[in-house]
Length: 140
Ligand code: CMP
Image (cartoon, rainbow, N blue to C red; front, side, top):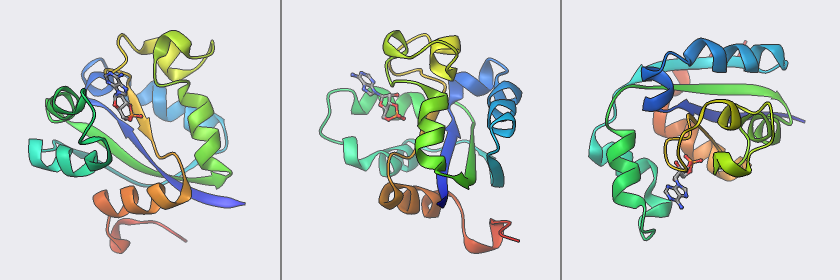
């Protein structure tokens, strides 16, 4: 089934020059990028994006990190792309991530884990609309 998901290259991925590497993994795996932008989130925007984690002990640190520099947000489209993107990213904790995944190859920390990807169709819809309006999506 064709799906859409939100991908974010986090500030560590951008500052370490990994934008091209991450994007090329998507392209090599038949994932289409149908919207893309670079943004520097404010702390309030980062807190809004990660509101589901607001009670977690890592919330302040995570939102500070996510607003510490620019991120690249993308809408990915493809067959089963939510799961496919999660497989390409690897586990949240890079120590548990499978070989050849983005996080295993590049992450340095459970928080600074290079990429974010939506975990379900419902969260993908909410996260996509956080970053993009309809005019910014190349659906044709
Ligand atoms: P992400 O997939 O963006 O979803 C929530 C983020 O919180 C996660 O990646 C990590 O960056 C961060 N995170 C999750 N668990 C922890 C944790 N135990 N300690 C610190 N950060 C975490």
